[in-house]
Length: 92
Image (cartoon, rainbow, N blue to C red; front, side, top):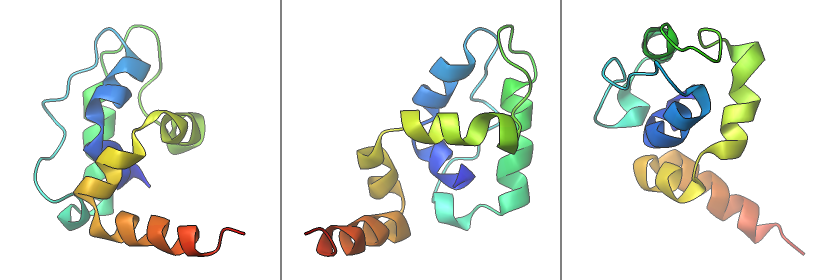
């Protein structure tokens, strides 16, 4: 899930607010970035934030998930796009 945040770092930055810096976030194919590298990058990017604590999975992940743009995630992640397609097939 955290890899999806890399696809919409502007929403992540908006959530964390002042002090957030996108510079530590990896660029390129989000599915190629190791999970631990994503966690480390999110912590680095949020370490100087004024309004929120440093990124923590329990404290922030589901709030961020509700804010990121699914279109950006699907464009950046073939697996996410397939996941959404499969879910769409199961709608009544």
